[in-house]
Image (cartoon, rainbow, N blue to C red; front, top):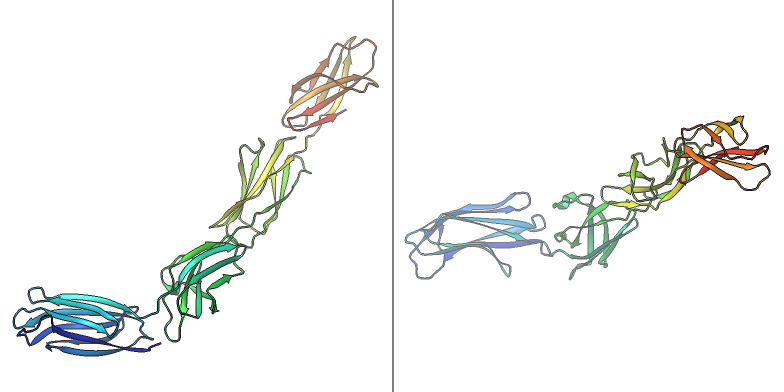
Length: 376
């Protein structure tokens, strides 16, 4: 690679046979990245003025050229003011006469080799795969950031390749978006980085392990987070209509926990649960799991009085939803007969239509759509 390059500033007549002898103006040569002044001169200059400027392009790979054409005398013949590099073309130029002056023109010369082209980017669990094309470089540097940015300084090098135009970035955080650029590495000056591309790593589905219904009116949701991300949260949802509608029970921000107790539930009710794991860049939902809460049986069943064809009974209702069913049968019979179903908060009933002198067994049953429980 060439480490120094000579650029010529010149002023010449735009047409021959003019009678001018001087031209006045000023030029500046700067580092386009940091504004460092590399060269500066001002006229008046004699006709056919040439001035060579040597630039260290390793230290200053992007150069800004500025010309300010102020005047020329005598007459008003066009003059050509320019910065030019052999075989590199013209970087800034002005063609004008006195009637149009002063004029300022700025041009930029980027000496860095062309950047590669990223052809594809994809992600799998904890990894991002990149591939790119470039005509002549052997070594490449891969740059990564966790937020979008336009300046290469916003990125950190995460790897280099030699003789390869592919790279796999590993051990990444699940459900995270990463931004990449690639640049070709040459002795001396590296290429410009590619345009930015991004990819989001997949977020593994949380595991809904079990639903513990051992305690009345609550369900313990047991789960395992299968991702390695420290970002985001876990939402636990519950449905009481078979999954037609869902209600958020809680949003868990402490990702080290593995269970949540959902309390204040109805007795003997089937509930379904599902989990949604979410980060700033990804979201994934688990399957569903159903469970039915404990349905407590009525207690204290007692026969208070008997008639020729009836028995009066009383009991305590302990369930908080559903109804109570009253059953009876002749002693020794196999099948129960239902006398009636009463509201949950009803605790007395008179069973009628019985046979004279017959012994009966009685029971009351707590009943919901999903469960029933007996007190004998």
